[in-house]
Structure formats: C-alpha cells, structure tokens
Image (cartoon, rainbow, N blue to C red; front, side, top):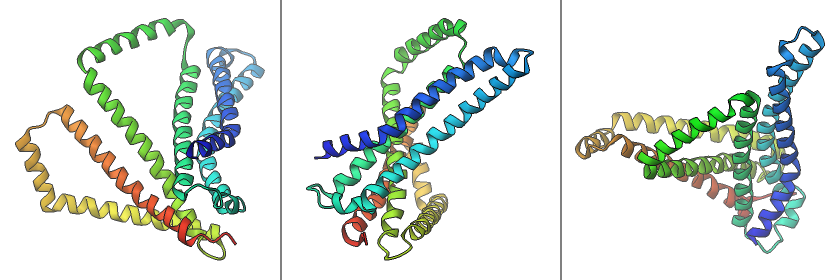
Length: 272
C-alpha cells in the first residue's frame, strides 16, 4: 500500500515541481546567453533584455526552492488535516505509511531541487569552448580519487547522502509536528500550528545549547579527549566518526518529531 501512496504523491507533486524545473533550466539558458553576449552590446534594448533574463533566472531559483518547501507542507496539510483527511484516515493504511509516503516524496523533491539548481548554475556559467577542458580536469580528479581514496571516498559519499536524507526528513517532521499539534485544537488551528512551530524551534535551540555547554564543561568532554588521544585516530577516521555522530543525532532528532507527529495524528487529530 505504501507503493500506491508514493505513486499518488509523486503524481500530485510532480504536476507542480516538474514544470518549475523546466522553467529553471530555460531561464538558465537565457541567463547564459545574456552573460555571453546580450550584456556586452551597445544596444540598450539588448542590455535590458539581458538583465531581465538574468533576473528571471534568479527568481526561478528562489521559486523552485520555496515551492519545494511549500508543496511539502501543503501536501501534508491538505491531504491529512483538511477535508481529504476524512477519506485518507479511512483507507486501509496506517498513519505510519501516510507519514512515510510524505517524507520520502518530500526528500526526493528536495534532492532533485538541489541537483537542478546546481545544474542550472552550471548551464548559466558554462562556456561552450571550455567544456572539453573541464571534462578532462574532472576525469583526472576522478582517477586520483578512485586510485587513492576509493573506499573512504565512497563511504564518505554514502554517509553524506544519509545525512542529507535524514536532514530532509527531520526538517519535514518539524513542520509536520507543528501542524499535527496545531490541528488538535478546536479553533484557530493554523495560528496554533505557527505558534507551535516557533515553540518547537525555541525548544530545539535551547536543548542544543544546553548540550553544547554540558559537553564542553562535563566529564564527557574530558572522556572524549582521552579516548581520541589514546586511540590516536587518523583524520579520515575522525571524518567518519563525525559523520556517524551527525547520523545518530539526526536519527534521534527526527525520531522525536516522528513520534509526536504520529501520536497527534492517531490520538488527538481534530478534523472538525
């Protein structure tokens, strides 16, 4: 059933995100032409056109990034907390499957947004004459990396992807938790959701600050220093250790929000 939910979510969100990606790529091509020729002419009309194309490219980047966030929040709000919630909650699927379908789709669109923004930036900045030279440079870099750091490089890349995925899920769950708590009230639900978002944000920052202070001044700080000195870990091992700490931290961070979201959707949701 999760597969069907994912298929439905990708269809619903793809109608919005895919056209935005096409517009972003089109404006990046126009911005490339502007920086390569239109802005260097003596004609005021062409200068104005070139400036507008560059501005359109900047607006397209902002629009794609903002819409990826808006679509993520809108799908959860519209699909589970508004009138559609009456139907979705009667389907033979669990609340966990409902939440995971939203999380996975949102994480995929966030990742695609990052890829498309980077691709659009390359298209805007690239000079056709130097493409071959850039390709050769990247080929040499890839050869050196795979020759000396193949295993560690692959592991770090995998760890980085896991960190990014968990970070996207945790960010989504932060919004989901605020919406779920806000919609447990009988009135002014969106106002309560906004208020709870900032309350949760304050609580997270407060707890994070307290952990930093305790870690800096407690016995754990000295224990960690003694452990690193005794084991004499290398720089690469320290990178892996740091990545693992980030992964565990994001798992804990996301798990708290996940439990709160599913609890309020199951026990306290007020659709009236």
